[in-house]
Image 1 (cartoon, rainbow, N blue to C red):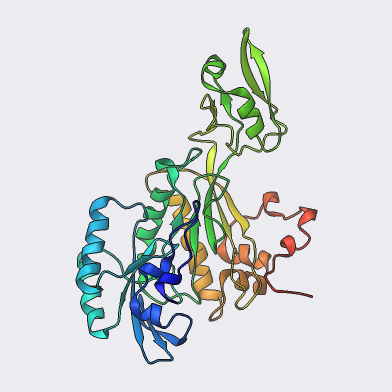
Image 2 (image 1 turned 180 degrees about the horizontal axis):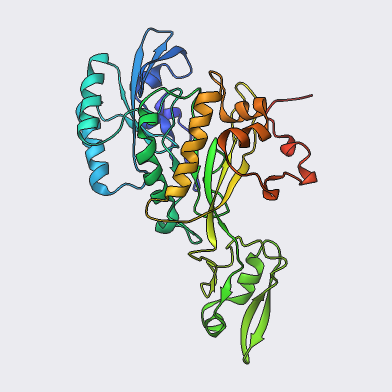
Length: 358
């Protein structure tokens, strides 16, 4: 595709990626013969024309300071002719056509403190939401959870030890912007917001707050002659959506805002149909700066999966084969009434499938 035929960017979209693509990739766009994995963190794509592109993948911390970005760009300029790309899971990939450049590129990345890996049957870099840096309703530091867990899982990122690839995601609130994953860690508020009635009328636009509640649990009220808001605690689902437009409705709590872990989410339909993740652990202390309780549970699930799953089974495939009762038995996680999927509207897990049926 010629550069002059690129689509024009729309106001809400991003520029066409073709202008940033490696020339060999652009030349062979849609015409690849096969690819292989020579070693962890390295990919080799071969086109029908005989051209080759080698990709070296390294993990980053997603929220990058300008000094780290410059360091990565300098490595890209020196070893990859400036051709780099970021993946949706916060990895950075360097693209070269000369295989002789791969070893020195890997050496430069490791010397600079970056880990190389995340390909094939490994634990990929953990994706996460913005946390306290940008999000308006965070209840935990998602990037901090990722840092503490990746410190424990770095060997699984750098090696091919898992039955299949493992995607892990973290979210700093129950909206779950981190999305589906083999293992997902998010926050759960367990108590309704605490309202500072003296500040509501001065700080909050009450109609906006009422409209923001997804279950209509908030309504106008008066306390001590001042206009304020009140919460119907029987309706409240403790989502935290009321806090951004009205900070006096404080829902974050050191004790009652807790972590939860979900497993079995999968977008792909390569070997089985997509699946939604299910709750396996809740009430985990939101315990910065290292979150040891949540990290221990994730490691326990990964260890059991590694030991018990068959080759190329994703976590959802493994659980489908052994069943949920055996999953809880093997991992040693307690099973409670909150784990029962009793929402009848789901039919069978929302009948989630990307397969086309006629």
